[in-house]
Length: 402
Image 1 (spheres, rainbow, N blue to C red):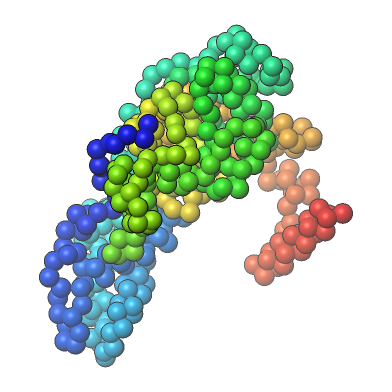
Image 2 (image 1 turned 90 degrees about the vertical axis):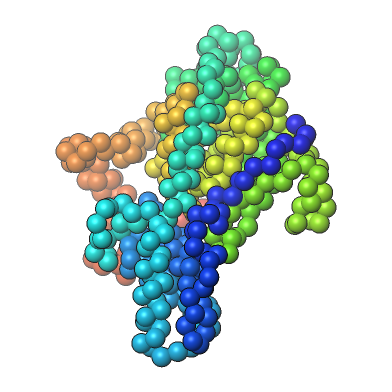
């Protein structure tokens, strides 16, 4: 699969997104400043800090970015002149972003989104739709035949469905569930069934450590997502405004990072019908997911996103896992916690994940039950909460070292 392929623009941000960025700069004497570039930098600054708010930011979020962008130019002038420049940078920034409301909102309302995250969500949805080519999951009898040495009696009903989906031929599969739901046991069965079909299973994760753990437990090949993408010619860097961009190399094209021609993938060569499982997929950001799905479409292998949407968010923009679930040919929810010996507490953790609505949350009284079991410490102020967390960490560390 290392042959040449047509070059595509894999940048998740291009200069065309800011048509006025490369235009003539407005000159303030002294000095001359590229206000469009500074506005783009202010938007990138606000966008980077907006990930916990779904990518939304306000005018008050843009202004600090404008201040930082202007300060990096080294300009020195009277306060009144600088205030005027900052106001113009902020105004230009608000004209180049996606507005969530039609009217001009109050300065504190998070009514804007950077254009690129919006386009990335639309782009990912379209690519996932292409990737989700129809196939089918294995039947339980087929799983038994293809993985004869695997202990399927250890699989519960949802694990069995997940293993059949991963080892099947659907282009896009998602598996969600809490920690301790038996991910390794289920993947071991899927790995054996795929091997019997002469299909490769590659496990990738956002971090190399997570991928290495999966590889050690299963014996399957594993990699970080970025190592896989790098091997297939994808590179990442920053644009003029400091935003992350992805590009792709054709076979034979000079790799600027190495000063030599790119010769195609060598470590992670994948074939059509192979299966790549994305572990901890809930923390994969939109940009990385876009490039990974594009690679899956080009190479013809299937993707299985596996993770927990209730755990940590990505470092970048969230939404990739949710979009994958909506477009998946097979979306499986693991519904049993196997790791915890206290079955009542295991059931409690599942209720905590699925409050439903306010009335249901109050009815199940999960918070009260957590407090009654001693899992919640009540404090009077933030400093006391910080001290309690520090104490709890050292208590846990001391217990673990005994």
